Amino acid sequence: MARPFRPVSMGSPRFRTIDEGGLLVTDAWFPPNLVLEAHTHERTVLAVTLSGTWDSVMDRRPRVSRTGMVLTEPAGERHANHFDGGGAHVVIVQPDPARIDALAASHRFLDRINQFPAETAMTLARRLSVEMEFQDAATPLAVEGLALELLAAAARAGGVSRAGAAPLWLCRVVDFLHANFLRRLTIRDLAAVAGVHPAHLAREFRKHHRSSIAGFQRRLRLDWAATQLVDTDRPTSDIAAAAGFADQSHFTRAFRGRTGLPPHRFRQTHRSQ
Image (cartoon, one colour):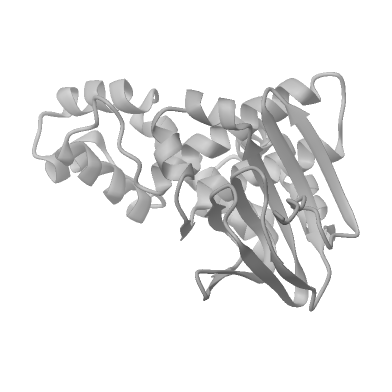
């Protein structure tokens, strides 16, 4: 007789769940030293750890998840879990199988076990957590949109290729931006990394990333700032300056636009969870 599927909230004394547009999103807190015996989930799992440490034992191998890490478990994958002495806060997205088929390239990503750190995915997961805590009439739409954005960000961070994939020189530029986003960079600097004309770089970057280079770098800086606010005690003004915002009010507006909360509220919310 087949074993019954378990919900991803199993063992969690506090969780929120929203099922919208074929995407089941769960925001769950797991207690310290919790042990979950081997079980399976009906839907594929994409989990982002917002705080804490826990492991998922699959194929007799523990895959340890820490703050900022993404983990995928294909539907029906048998596994056991253990949470360390601090417990864990995890946001989980489970697409309906029919929705997975519509996600094209992401399907290949979600159909296998993956584990890696992804700061942008963590920022989106935090926004989902905030949206689910402070719900209003627009929450279902917001949750669906953020969950889709999270799936896309995780798939890209996990190395999924797309039709019309970016040229290798543009991939070098993106890698350089990820490694140097806090530096003051010019288009000419990046064009030198790519070995192409600055105008060509700007056009191709927008074509493949649907963003200007400055906008892309600003998002990386804001994602970094979000991590600094939660994981350190640095003053907000110092974080803003390090992220390239000379004006505190400009940083606050940009940060609110990226995360849905002003910096001080973001820090309070995620420190208290």
